[in-house]
Image 1 (cartoon, helix red, strand yellow):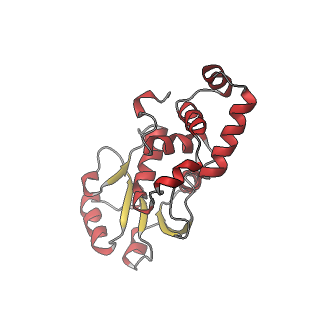
Image 2 (tube, helix red, strand yellow):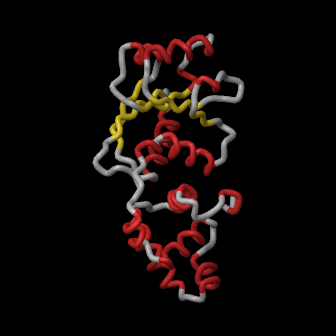
Image 3 (cartoon, one colour):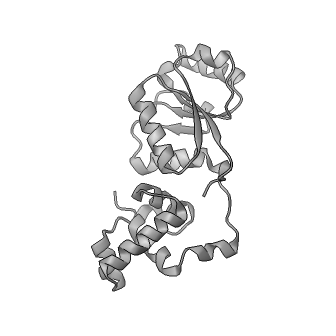
Length: 196
């Protein structure tokens, strides 16, 4: 869960609409409250940006990229997630997404990027999710269908659906990928067990 009252100021330094839309979709699925700023060239970064977070696509960085990446760090002091390629100087950044990354890896990297906004729920609030709901969550995150979950837990499909609906309401997470990331981040499942 993220801090509800904290609206994130995020700059998307991405030229292409399709890529921007995809990033915004993933962020929305993670339940983050974001105010977006869009820029499409590095000159805008030099003018000053009013955000603590930036997702930067390597295509807007002029050549020589290594030199210009270092210059960017002089102008922008916030946290940067680079969408790069394997040949770039990605070591300049703590957070890098590569085109070859799998869907779950991308979601985890984006969630990790915003992890400082995460809040630990007090121990007594964990009771809000029942033991049965945690079992359902684990199975959903591992890629099982409603019928498979019902068969494994010896309950009806309608009961599974009810528990999933309750989970969605309690956690504020509406997608399977979002529930999977939640289960991974809370150590309910192991990443190696998730079906591709």
